[in-house]
Length: 238
Image 1 (tube, one colour):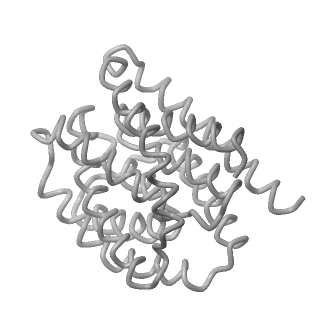
Image 2 (cartoon, rainbow, N blue to C red):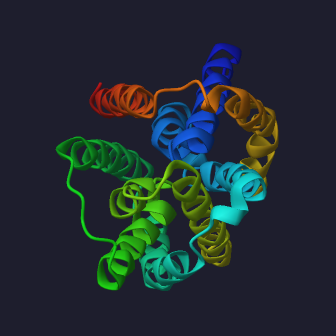
């Protein structure tokens, strides 16, 4: 990875972490396509490791707002989903995995923009958790299903509940990926290099969150995600 590529990735991770803290998701949505463009072998492990740190920080800051019961049902659904996602990582070549990242990003944006608001009943939360586990383990992008089912929650409660779910879910996915041999020193080294970017995003989010318009911030995240996913698709066919 060249210095300009790493600089762009560093900035992307910082912005993604800022969105993750501000609106409850965004790190995977933004960083996964960019990482897949530069080095597909780093997905999904690097983003999952970075997300573990970011969501832990959010949970420390706003853990008092956590909906423990809702997060518990979502995690029950994530278990089989994570196993299915790990199977995809094991069998898919790098190019197909990169295209899957792009498809998941674009599908997540479309669903979010259509404004579908399911009732956060037990069955819906379980299904969202399963889909999040499948997508999150295979591509590191598990936010859209949970953001959709929990979008009626207030800002702090949404961020805390999603962070609690993603912290436990990311650890779960990483454990399964490690068992299949997908976690290696190369990924750990790049995670260490990008960790300061995630920390910068978390630190910037705290003073900026009160000034950000949530709808506009969400829209900006979607536009950036579409641009990254589109560039990733183009790269696979050029």
